[in-house]
Length: 285
Image (tube, rainbow, N blue to C red; front, side, top):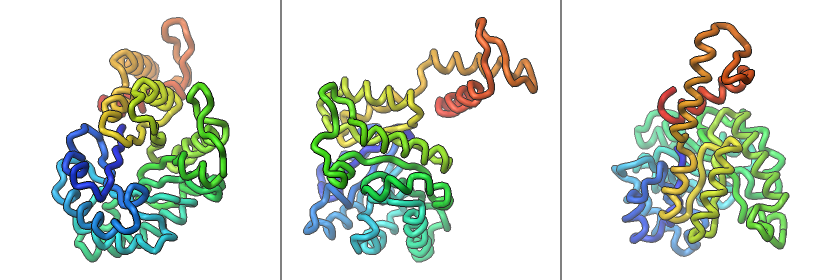
């Protein structure tokens, strides 16, 4: 899963085109992109769009403290979305709380226990910054973690999120790194946040390539035009695949070795792990 495209849940036009973008995951949104007076209508539209969908479907529900989550789940779980996106998550306990609600909904809808996975948006409040090391106790539903810039900026009261060169400023770079580490510690997919200037595809490509190099495995998108750029950035290149295969082959030729020599350089076990992970992402592991 490389690209995660948000689609407003109250837009019939956008929902009708949701699966044409090539996104690995389509996130039908009931939260920020839907106004309070459109929530009820959006639930019905999202349930319809998720039913018998041709691709991997997620639904972003409203935050746990809004009092809207139960109505969200009651409306959409019959459509059997593969994943629920939890906004404003502050700790692994929040994911577990959502998981308990999902267990009830799955039982009511005849869905196998635990089938519905969770993507936690884990940095949208100030308090959430202190909980990024707790997601290893979130339970088996947790499949991915991502971080949010816009809500965090409001929570912190900052006057800017990017510097003159377009790079995220220090507070958000810190949140990004902690989310990456938290996801790795929990053994789930780390997903980079959105690039909000959807017209700047060159800027998106640069940021996506940097995220991939840093260890993220995918990125959120807010416009269909961003999907192809993200997919390319998070798809291992033929050159990278070939190099990874050579590392694996070198270790296969020296069973039990902790270090091998390749092209005049010493390659150790962490290089092997990285190579194996890259090949798995490329579908060749």
